Each structure stands twice: as C-alpha cells, then as structure tokens.
Image (tube, rainbow, N blue to C red; front, top):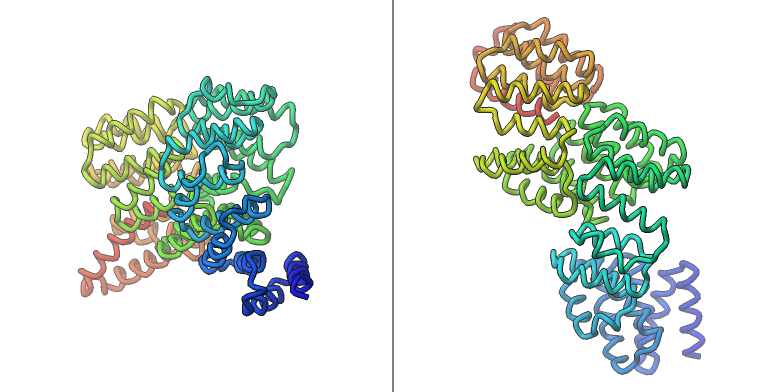
Length: 508
C-alpha cells in the first residue's frame, strides 16, 4: 500500500500536480515506517518546484543522512537537484563542503558545472580553470566551457589540447578569443566567416553584433541586431547590448519598443530587466533602475552588463566607491569599453587621477578605433583646455552619433567661461542628435543665459520626444518662476533645483 502511495505521489509530481504531491508525501512522512529517503526527497523536489529553495535543503540533507552508503545513479541525480537548490538559495558554503568530500575526477559533468558556479561566485579563478579543464576532459565538445576558459585569461594555445578537433568549434573559439583579446578585426572576420557558413544563425550573429559594439562600431552593431530581430523576433540573447546602444544614443522610443516586445514573452530573462533598468536610468528614476538591475542579477548573478549598469546607477546617485566595485566585477567578466569608461569616471570622482590616466591609456591601446576611448583621454586631460578640446573634437569626428564627447566638449567650454561656445557646439551637431538628451542640455544652457524663449523651446522639444521627462518638466516650471519673478524670492531653492537639473541632464 505504501509503495502504491509513493508511486501515485510521484505520478502527481511528474504531471505537474505539485501541491497534491506535497500533501500526499506529507502524510507519508508522518509515519516512521513510510518516512523513507525516497519520500523525503520527493517532498524536497516539490519545494524546489515551488521555489522554496531554503526549505528544501533541510529535507534533502535529512534524506542523504539516511543514504550515506548508497552511491546509486538515483542518489547521484538527487544530489544534483540538491546542488541546484543550494545555488538558487545562494548557499555556496554548503555546496563547497559537499563537493570537497569528493575528488574532482569523480564528479559528473553536471556536478562539475555546479561547482564552477561556486568558484565563479567566490572569484576563485584558479579552481574554476581546473574545473573547466576537467569538464572538457569528459566532454571535449563543451564549447561554452572552452569559452569560459578563454574568459578566465587562459591562452588559446593552452585551451586547444582540450578541444574536439571539430573545425567549427575551433573557428568559433578562435573568434571568441580574438574578441576577448580586443583583436576586433580578427574577431569580426571570424564571426562573419562562421555566419556565411551558417546563414541566419542568431547566436553567431549576436556574437558579431556585440563584437561590433565593443569595437565602437555602433552603426554595424545596430544593423546586425536588426537582422536578428527580423529572422527571429523572439531571440533574447544580446538584446541588452542592443538596448544599451539606444540608451547611449538617447533613442528612447526605439528602446521602449524593444522593451515592449521583450516584456510580452521574456520576463524571466535578465536581458528584459536590464532594458527596464536602462529606461529607468534615462528617466533619472534611480531607485527603480536599481530594483530592476537587482532583479537581473537575481536571474543571472554572473551577467557582465548587469554589473556595468549597477555601476552606472551608483555613479548617478553620487556613490563612486560602490560604482567602482560594480565596474570592477564587470571588468573581470569582460574588458568592455564601457567598463573602462565607468572605472575612469569613478577614479576621477575619487580624485585618483593617476589610475584614471592609466586606464584611459589602456583603453586607447585596446580600442584605437573607439570614439569612447578618445573621449576618455579627453576627460583625463580636462585640466589642459587645448588638449582636451582637441581630443573631444577628434572623438566627435570618429563617431558623429556619439553624444558623450559632444556633451563633454560643451561642458569644457562652459567651465572655461565660454557659454556661447557651449551652446554653439551642440547646436551645430543637433542634426546628428535629434534626441531628448540634447534638447535637455540646450534647455539648461539657454536657461543659464536667461534666454527664456529658447530654453522653453528645447524643454518642450524634449517633452515631445519623452513625455515622462521630469527634468524637462522641472525646467519649464523654473522658466515660469524666473519670468514671474518668483525665482528671486526662492533663490536658494531655485539654485538647488538648477544643480539637480544639471546633474540629471548628464545622467539622462
């Protein structure tokens, strides 16, 4: 009778009737005779299915105590489910303790994969590398593990002996290696060659698009991302990078359209939450941006772009120390040009100018074709007006769509006591940047010149593009105060608002 009840409970579980299975296994656990390890593990499996990971651990551990000398396949599978629950509950110490009881060579591929997650979280690169090598010994076609080895800084020559001699795998790993080494021309050539042999493969196209983005060629990156969306509108991987380009260029409507698409089918992916965070950043809603990025990290705690955007949020709220920690985590995962930018901005905010200079020079060496790298050189040279101006102008010419050097050059003129030049440089590039960020900047600059008509025009233009812009709404309210003379009565408050407005313009 007991066996029949267990079989029925298991049938309920496999058919998705998890709550019914829990009730039945609960009754079986009340009786000492029917409280078998199999029943306890099935109850723990139900808890995992209901995402009650911490509760499940106690039941798994109770069952394993009763199965101490049992090394059957069934127990090994249950152990793997326990390890998964530990990872989801972020109980990495429990995992480490359990894994250290077994030599690396005796672990299954699934267990090694779980152990790798533990080492990643502990930033134990040396152990993670050994773990990857053992996985490849067991399965030389594990491409994702070979890529991880390359990401840890292992050379292609050292990885090659562990790989299957499949030509596609060798070419794919080689292209990834070149991308990680910032040898972008070789990486682009490699991914293009692979894509020609596998027409319409979204994974390869996504790699190509991200490589274009990292090299600073946003135009080519956008072109490839659009092709991916046409081939498969439900493809998610890399869409966070796609949205980040829109954010960089101030293209809010395009970002919003991308978010609307992903929300309809991919709320469980970290890419969707990253895009929502980017939109909140544009709105200067930093608490919401932070909540969204935390959700992305919950889904995937080793996603580079999540740490990068976390750093951007921390910088925006005036916490460069916390920002620096996030950008360093992102940098360890990928030497992305935006990670260099974030770290340079952090070090400049912390008056660690030598470190900012060193990183800007490293970025320029790795990304010689990137307008962002030249812009960073301008930022660290801001005390030398002529040099900084030359570098910002060069950066603008390298990529007319890049807003950051344009705003930086305008600020440089303003700091040098030349407000008219600050306005003219932005107006001369308005055709290349018909976006709300630029109109906000012009609205602010004209406000400082007490040119109410032009200030109002640009704030209204910003609102027409982005009706939720609180910065534009505040700007228009400040103009009305100034015209009506109430600005004189509330001088302290108004100057405080203007300071906030200026900060928000740069963040938006």
